[in-house]
Image 1 (cartoon, rainbow, N blue to C red):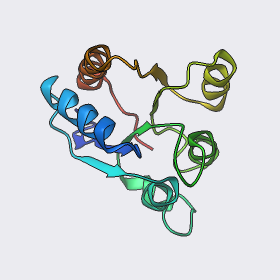
Image 2 (cartoon, one colour):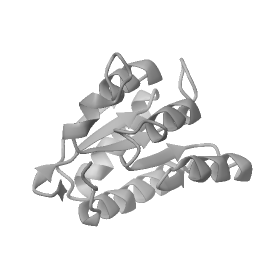
Image 3 (cartoon, helix red, strand yellow):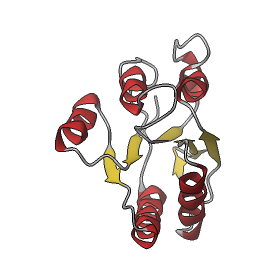
Length: 147
């Protein structure tokens, strides 16, 4: 996956180690070879995405795609989504919500805040693996806009 001839880095924010391994395995199985940088908590992910000063300036020269779980130990994925989408330098970064939450109001809120895709993790392992493979195929054809 490239954006204007630049490699896109996948930032995976997922605190469940089993889910993180499953996501990576199935993204790879779908033929996506991009670097995946995993984070288990929101603050570390935001430091990487927006910089430790949270100015977002570091995002200007990077092409990132964010895979975001909503249920994290230190903050809500909604908070992360809000911070990324309200930042002038990071607001165009694509964000894919990947979570077990299937509440309609929560889903609508994520789209209202600027999420690009919302995928509910099936509890069934095989269904989840299939959903991630489909997501990998989506990544392989998706263009990430430049800043």
